[in-house]
Image (tube, rainbow, N blue to C red):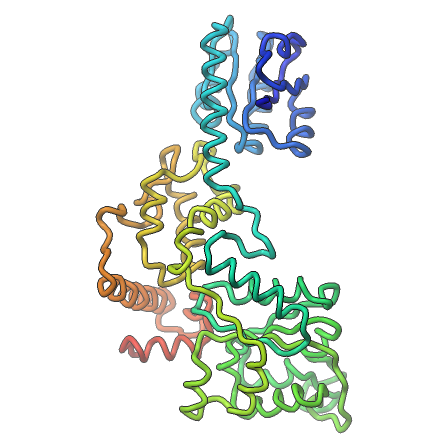
Length: 437
């Protein structure tokens, strides 16, 4: 039987709607408690004739928080003529009827609302992200299976994936599924720490090791004791520090800067890179012995273009995550927008999807997000040729880098921070695209 939450002081609604499982509540506070415990697809609001402007403002606040339910309201003429009523109808309601409502029309409206809500919920089935990795595509299903396997081991893990594809999310999933889940998870971006400080930050320092070292300080590796440390963009680690990390992987001990005694640290190392480390080894940019120490359990995070079946699920997940930024009238994605998402090349991967969804939440003017709100051409206008997609991706990368550098007056550090990549990675991308500093 279809469930319906009904906000009314009239206790006859259950008898009047025999084909519905009516959950009757007398007010907004009680309805909020019910919906927190048991979400409902469809709702009916029976407003009393005594409802005033304060009541409508309270209703507006309630509906802003419970926008996932498809609401139909019954309003007496005295309420329907209030100035605030039109905004509530436009912003929040699937439909409304002026009382006394026609029973047949109301039954049709409730059935229509429930059908639309059910279709939307079915199309987004599986939005709850298992292990923090949402989606049902073959690529992400395979990755989750691999994570379950490597999580049971204690050996180092090396994750490869394009920038923005979700490598840290995969590392968090490994930690959460491991025996170390109750310990700390310490993420470190190896390219974001200044070279002069990285050794002290990773390994700590002893008192008096250098000017300003007034006391002993534990490093980030020590702070992860009993848990996992995530070394993101490991390729950006300076060569002179790679030998120190190799020693730690071999002996499970570290030396603080300026110290003479070693410290044993029980921590699992998970490293990640968007750079092909084998190629970096061949070019002499990364130690071969460290590569083989890290590459015991390799994982590859698929690019978003390899997960097109997950795009609707991911877009809805981000729509909900950033719902506080949206207009109350905005209810979701149009079919054209979903087609445009599937047609796009996604050079920035999941990070780009998040940015485009957040942009649409702010800029969209209709009830549904359109392709132009996402900054995408409609799917029928998108290029389908593989070579064209490759060109589009390269052009998008170059345009993003140029725009960021222009915004920060050529400051590479700030541009890298805005693009969520390391300075070394940005320098490589600038060289690749022929961009001068």
